[in-house]
Image 1 (cartoon, rainbow, N blue to C red):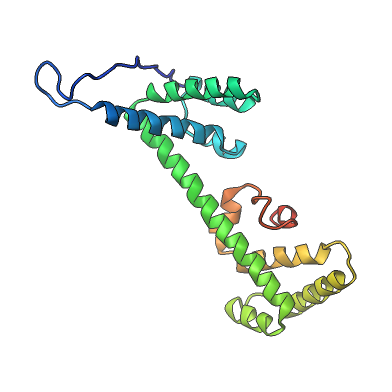
Image 2: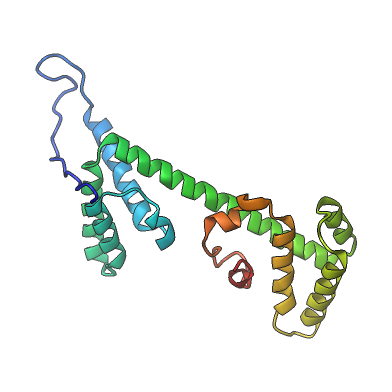
Length: 208
């Protein structure tokens, strides 16, 4: 059973020292910390479903996040996001740190996957535009079959010229991905999600 989050009461800090003379956080520092936690909560709400499942959330925080994702009404969503922020302030420091680490790891994988996706798309364009590009690719990836590549390139060029659906265009993407994959560390596999729609119209089928 996951631990329930404790919602801490909001206290106002009137001075920088307590009655015993010890330093305590200033109002501005507390405000910055509250804002950072609120933003972290919003980042959780905005995550893809698969990534959200990997976040180390307490049970009631997870419930609040899922409810915020479900709400479509603007004002209702705003109130729910504020509630998520209060839930975040009830977490222990180690729980917040674990969430930040998991989120950073997710963002790192996405960044690497996006960069690799762009590289595959650029490589495909080079192969279609210049026969010499295949020689360079084979030199870097000697396990690749040149004849298979030439067939895919020739068919992709033909279907582009004839205005046909991009079947071989997509197969060429997959071939480049497979031939250049570095074992199990391929970020496109690790991300386990579809690329952003604004990258390339056919990419959602490519990376399947």
